[in-house]
Image 1 (tube, helix red, strand yellow):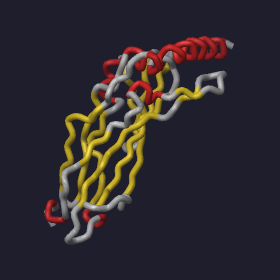
Image 2 (image 1 turned 135 degrees about the vertical axis):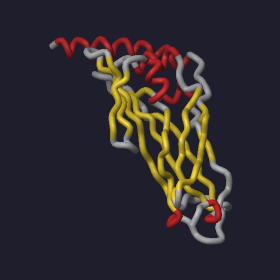
Image 3 (image 1 turned 60 degrees about the horizontal axis):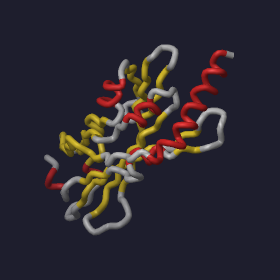
Image 4 (image 1 turned 90 degrees about the vertical axis):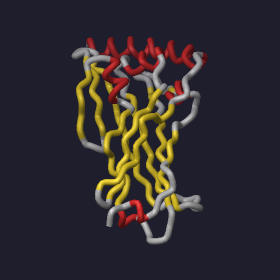
Length: 190
């Protein structure tokens, strides 16, 4: 019973806030500390989204509602318009209102972290660390390629309501993107 009352209270607060939040100016999230690097015959990526939190977005993160941050990795040939390789993974964050801890699931590592503060969330939620993008078997001799990484958030559905709320409003409806420089097989130590 207590959980039901708590769920209704949380959904009411968020629902009222969702009427106000779209009028709050968002932020322009960007990738920073971007590193595409080679280890043997594999390419890895590390990076962090910056400028992606606002006070209002932090309130959503602390509400107990699950928030999913998706990452899409695509490999393109130099003049290609269709990706040669696609990869998707996500980070899902939920605040436990009883334990007062955030639980972050990192799908690319199939692991969960417990975070104590919103500052810890800011460090870990939008960070990718040494994620393998591709290996040399994905590439052809004599062709040039580049990698594009895009981030976006799923809409959330508030408890007890059928309304969806678009979290991308907090990022001015823009998906942050970063791209590697052009490369070919000569970049790898074969």
